[in-house]
Length: 293
Image 1 (cartoon, rainbow, N blue to C red):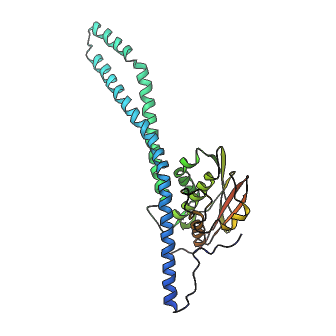
Image 2 (tube, rainbow, N blue to C red):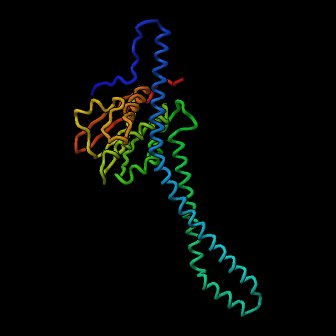
Image 3 (cartoon, rainbow, N blue to C red):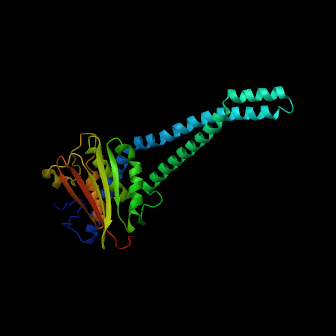
């Protein structure tokens, strides 16, 4: 596979070190703007899915709270009726009849179930928000020591709405050391590969995420059993703005920016594909690299 020249630095024709530094700065700014543009486009495409994932638990928590309000009123009425009984047997019988009317046994069982469901719903919302925070790494946009498995899981939760109607996601995680990286950018690579895999599948597909390491590198592969990429197109998939998706479905920047991010980390992306069989992208990153400033 040919080596892409994305964001390669041209040699200045005139001037010395200052001219070269200026060109480097302009290229870095252009790369940063492209990265931000692609990130905003990605966030836009994920927003509806994330809203759906949050809306589901919020919906049943809201419904449960409405039911709970009625249950609590009935239970308080039962308590008050028994408190007013004293030694009046007629009032005692009326209180017993009221317990049957409100089906006290059902209330006692269902109120606990509704509380458990509501707690689970709130926990799901909390996880989604935390995953969104982990995915974007809003706390630190710098080089940090990162657990790639955690990044994969937070990214999977972010793109769940894109995947769940297309494919079953399988995991084959091996032991991985933590590595120093730009975590939010690595997560963006994972997101691009996962969404591309989903778009390559019509329905009832399979996406396999596999991780492993050797003495010097960590490996993360994303495989799908989708339509595959024709051999004549493999040499172009990392070119900026090249896409095989319909108009409006992609910017053509996802893979080219992913390539640039991996190169910035001293790694590489490998691809294997067969039309009608599927595609595997493998991200290879060095375990040890100098701490970035």
